[in-house]
Amino acid sequence: MTDKITNIENTRGDINLPFGIYIHIPFCKKKCNYCDFVSIANDNLMCEDSKFIDKYLQALSNEITSKIATLNNYLPKTIYIGGGTPSILSEKQIIFLFENLYKNLKKQFSNEEIETIFEVNPESITSHKLETLKIYGVNRLSFGLQSYNDRILKFLGRIHTVKDFCSAYDLAKRIGYKNINVDLMFGIPEQSLDDWKETLNKTIDLNPEHISIYGLTIEAGTKFFSSGITVNDDLSADMYKFAIEFLKEKGYHHYEISNFSKKGYECLHNINYWQNNQYYGFGLGATSYINKKRIKNTEDIKEYINGKYDLEFEELGEEKKMSESLMLGLRLIDGVIISDSIKIKYNKQINNLKNLDLLIEHNNLIRLSDKGIMYANCVFREFL
Ligand code: SF4
Image (cartoon, rainbow, N blue to C red; front, side, top):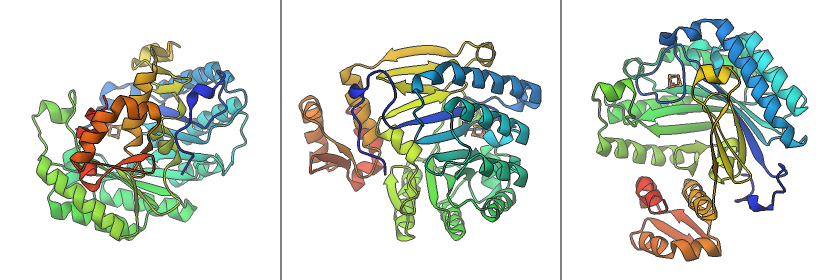
């Protein structure tokens, strides 16, 4: 894991501390029924037009060039290309993206020390794209599988099948990717506990280095929301509990509420977020957190393409920073260091949560108990 929480106050306005880079590719072939991410789907026509994606990539490159000078040649610890569906890009577009990023960073293509992650959806990845990504230093893939059941995938509005995923995963392994994450989803109305067990069992059979599991939530503005779909919270909790025990038994280290890995394969990029360290976010709707300032990019694609990137700017005061560090840090199963100022400000809340067996304090750290992991959102609310 990376260093414990870093004191961002020490910065002189430049980046000499651990930081990550996130790049958002907001295009998808079709909008999934549960999706509230910043993504533009074919329904919107623009996505079908590869020239439109080219324009976006040019705007992205311009944004990176305009902001990256502040890095003073420091290299990021991690690079994450997420979406949307980054694997929707053609090989030519992938090359354009990395060439421009690395030119700005003055980074060599293949630098194993930088964790470089690319999100992949099974239906849009090819052997040529995977080989190209490898040349450009991508050393970790994150597959959006969600379920090992075609009926459930269809219900979710995903456009891949289990067969598509198996072929793509197999291809990635044959091409030599040794660090692969598989995203799974539970708490889906069409899904029984046995369906979920089957998904976990079949995923384990593939022996991926990392597994992320997310409970379905119904967000406003999604197709599920407008259809009145609801989640059975009790069944969802049973599925989560089963997964924690099952994955631990199978040798996966539960290091964050939703994340499990083989030893040494924790996602450094996400750990950087949970430790409330700095990051640059480039692209539509992306957020950056640099020198105690949060900058949120516009979610309007036309604005973005016309070079109007930043939308909101928030300077985080001490209290907000403390509250965020606690809520993010408690997501990590090892917990978070409690400084004297945290102790003073949140003494009452910490003691109440300890009395309810939701928090454990040990050696100047607090962490969620097993019960606290199940009620994490209730714990976080206490620190808002
Ligand atoms: S593939 Fe991911 S980002 Fe795209 S619509 Fe589906 S859930 Fe949203």
